Amino acid sequence: MENSRAGGSGSGSERGERGKQPPACGAHRGRTERGQGPGGPVEAAGSEATPAEHVAALLKRAQNGFEIGEPVLARLRTALMHQAELRSYRQRNDEHRPLRCNSYRHVFLLADGSSLLLFELEHDTGPEDAFVYELYADEDALDRAEQRVHERIGGGIGPGSEGDELPAWLAEELLLAMGPAQPRREYVADASPDHARRLLRRAENEDGPGEVVRELLQGALGHHIALITKPRRRGAGRDATWCRFYEHAFLLEGGAELSLWELEHNMNRDGRLVCEVYLDEAEAEVAADRHARAQGVEL
Image 1: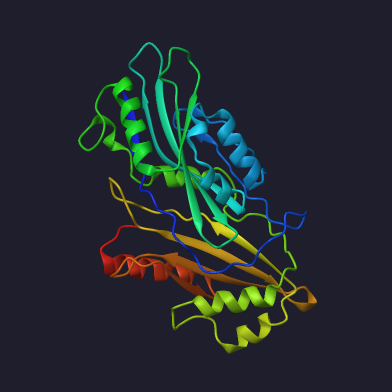
Image 2: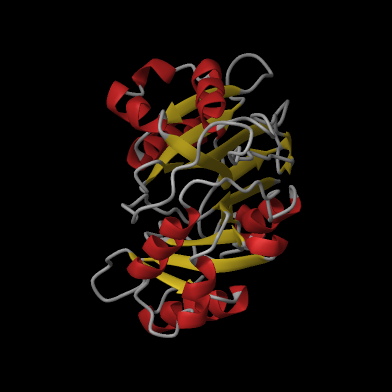
């Protein structure tokens, strides 16, 4: 019996300005959580690792870590947040031992506001019953590596194969089950009113927060940015859709809190990356669904 699932993939794109968070105790330390993967327990890269520590761990265990170029590493050194996402998995059990192949997408939010992706391939198709790790900065290179490993595993894979019975959204459900979708808030006082102004200025939706909210945020004492995991129900095959949710939480005078929900997507006619900001999380999700339907995209 063989299990297989290939998730859709996003592509990092340039984002607008973001407030820069210092690496002190008040900074958000990106969480990377892995749980019980489809092929067995998957080792965590460090549930409280900083982005720099996470990159170091990826490079240390990758047998081809030296192939990641210095320009990519230089950009990763500015990362403020990171998150690991299950991209695909495959397991074949009809051999003398199970053969497994998993891939992960590591998303890094950089200090300049852009996103950068690293792709990790994890498999145990070598002579020893132990996982081997490979790291790629290019998704096409990952696809070629996956194909090489799939040829070693053998058997059918893809549409019409035995493993196609698994729901396409299963990996996202597993990701949500690994831990809380909402990271712990750690506010930093780093020009928070300016961060709010920049966020609202680049928002392109007309139904965003009004002037009352703008005035409240002029007195913000701190802010916290979180990349929010959302289940995306994708179709089979490659998916160039980029859809991300961010919570921008602000600490106000008197201890009150106010959150703005940013929807970043390329679901428009020209594929341009746009930013929309909403006062309510549900409104951001409804907007994402509306854009997806208009473009014939399955989320």
